[in-house]
Length: 202
Image 1 (tube, rainbow, N blue to C red):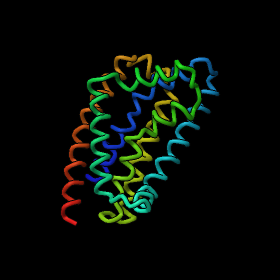
Image 2 (cartoon, rainbow, N blue to C red):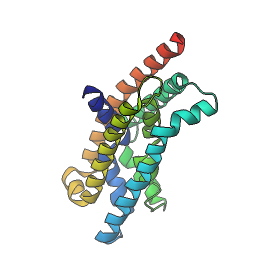
Image 3 (cartoon, one colour):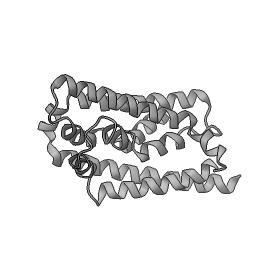
């Protein structure tokens, strides 16, 4: 159960459901309610497909090109750490991605599905948390349920986006993103240390 909770918190941090709300609201500002629901569902479905691919096939892809998972784990941890720093000190996820929307890319695929929901950090997390040498299929399916639970929360939040955003505002979404960034930085550091340990223990 603790492993499931850890995976859930990890995915919640990298996917950042609350930080996606301002992006979704900006994307769908001119759409009718039924269109907003359709866009939300499509965006989550596309993001789910991408993350499931990385969860079940990401390691095989790495092995095909000769990259050990421990090296990917260290690289991924460093990237996640830098991503976390931008969440803490730089522009929050809402500000960054609303700017993308304002440039005219107003579709469910971009920037909603990618990179808002299925972010690079989420793709890395899907691979790192399903190491086939450390975990069996049952454990990886367990991890998949944690990821799908977070994606379910994303969908629920998007479907209630207007009401939620009126309550927390852009400042609230930014604050939550920074808290998630701090959690993500801790998880990223742990991944780097574990990757180094595994690399030299082989």
